[in-house]
Image (cartoon, rainbow, N blue to C red; front, side, top):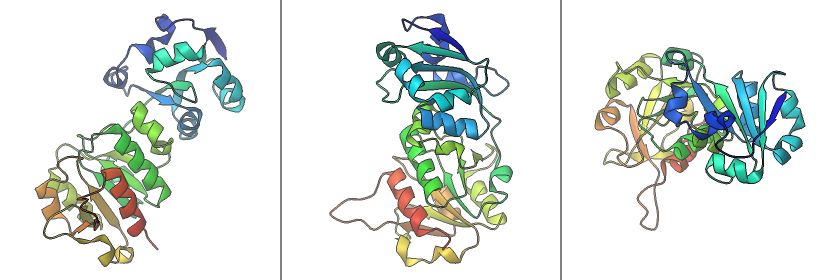
Length: 272
């Protein structure tokens, strides 16, 4: 490894980590796929295991020392920038308890056909915009037996720093991709139906039935459709689905956060 010590956040070597927004990183090699930043050893390890190419590493000296096996798994010529806890916190923008970041090259985004080809249980996220929610949904999907995640263009990018960190690197452990912009909300549901998926919308309306009242395990292929944090699913999407389900609430609570609701739904709708 090529190790360089950094003593301040304005060092040009830290530019990828310090000066670039998520959007700039995304477009770094435009028109080719750009970069993303993976944070913490476990997220970086899972990204490497999934075949993502590292560009450079930035870390606190103590964290690098404690993760020797991870560092040894990196290419020999990769630049490794070492800094103090204080400089790392300045660069990261907050205190990261396991101070390690890795700039990595993105892969081409997969399309619906590639993601859903062999999947039996998928979740479709419609304009879920909060990276924390996106990351938590990926973690729940991987843990609770979902095979893939599909997103609309209005969703938060699963490779944003916060999303991949909250997912504990599970954005690299489960297939995901985007629906084409050419499809309308109803068109996306019709496409899934044509692939044999039974489509269940998670929504609060007069047609919604309690989640536990249906036996979803009998469906060979099942798609769970989750909507935006504030406005939920589009009416067009709901109307195109085979069923609308909701999680019964108590004590005057109207609904769960979308990530919490997703975890409940994944457990209930798993293939038994």
